[in-house]
Amino acid sequence: MPCRVLLTTIPKCGKNLLVSYFSVLGLARRLDDGDLAEAASHAQARWLLREQVGQGGGHSLYDLVEFLSGTAAAFDRFLNALDALPDTSFVQGHFAYDSELHQRALDTGVTIVFLYRDPRACLASMAHFLIDRGEPAALVPQLPRHDLVAAFELLIQGNDVTPPFETVYAPYDGWRDAEGVVSLRFEDIVGPRGHGSMAMQASALTMLAERINWTGSQQNLLDGILRTFEPRAGTFRRGTLDGWRDDVVGVTGTPTWAAIDDLARHWGYDDAMPTALTPDLDTALTRLIEGVHAEYVCATEEQDLLAEGLTLRDETIEHLQRDITAYQVRTQRLGRRVEALENRVILRLVDRVRQVTTRLTRRPR
Image (cartoon, rainbow, N blue to C red):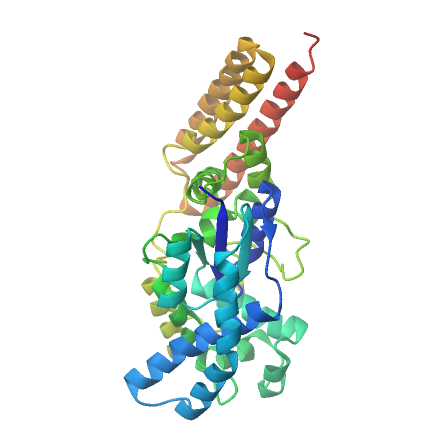
């Protein structure tokens, strides 16, 4: 089956992670033109029109219908271009859920990948862009003060220029449980460089490669996972899953913030969720490393390479699991530091295995 992807993301939710990942896997980015932006705006307006008709208020229906009329041609051209999307390529945009777009992708074999993030982290990212970069420029004059608290209050409550923050997420909600859609959380794919889990990252991105019908080598897959975190991307700020907690201190506990907590829970984010690594820590990494070894064994016909690599993995994982068992009795505060330490150990494991495979494949036959 062809490997063709439509990547739709909520703004400020980490699209650069998957753009980097797909690029390393060899997928070419397509349709990065005016039609793409207009088509995404058209889908957003269609969702808004449905909401306004259902709720009987808000934006001018006349203005929405007029806007839809002006962007309909771009949306149709985008659908047609999606039909003809080449193999091993992807398209990325901020597409609100649209049933016609969804069905068209299903009918033509294009896999839809939807990426979302803790709304509180997304809000913090938007506030920093407003204060640090002056983006979007139309909102800067709306700030009563040039600080994060003022930015949070403006973004959360909204005004005549910008809608309340909770409406940023609502248009995308339909993608989460839609048929055939691969839904991913930023927190599961950011990896240890973003204070996440290496095991979760490897598991999620390996699953994603399978779901999009990617058929490259395990070595290429490993490279893609290790290079997913790309801080040089143009819209990359910090890219961590927990940095927002320090940013929102000035507004937490207020009635305004309560609505954001409710939104986070609606999207499945609960602060009571454990942050420790999963018990089957080595499952995804074992599978990936074994795949890399198997490719080298097949190419060199040296069966001892796989045995040596697996022995190295087992010894390192055993040591790692002993550390995890010892650290589990620590306080919750120390638990976060434990996770970071374990992730660094896994990264060293990956590097060591890659060094072993490189050294052994260079042996004279």
